[in-house]
Image 1 (cartoon, one colour):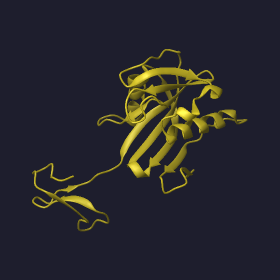
Image 2: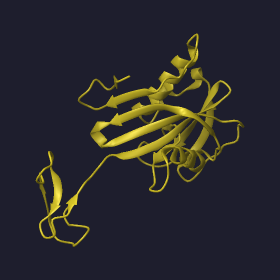
Image 3: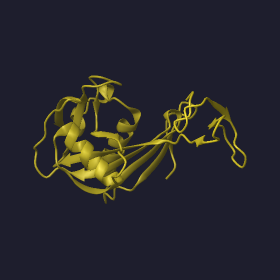
Image 4: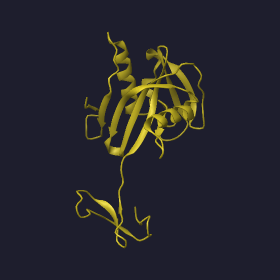
Length: 187
């Protein structure tokens, strides 16, 4: 950030009085510009014993497989964002069960929320953001072609939880950063 969005004057990166970290502060009007993590919301849609994946038609990771997910918009809940992204990317209507994974992606300033969801009918399709959509059994998952570590984690947790004698699908809280050993399960 170089200029204040309030008055257009130059900003300086410094620790404001009473704060504990650097912020962009306007040299003219004193406006403090906070930059906070972005929320990514999506679904892990389940139909029978299969999960729905989308092959990306956008960067980053064009051509790789992912769960339907994207940035939350102002004026919507995380649940609404997950439902909207699933409809936009997979042309699918799902019924949310519960929040399933919450990942703090520290190195890119994002928090990703993936909801476990039921796909009542095998009706889905492609969109401008998706090359193709497809239902996969656990054995068919293209593990080496998944777009993001967060998606791989969510799928691994899901299949492990599903195989448990008494599947409960607990909320997984994860911290992910290059400085960490890829994955730290918080709970």
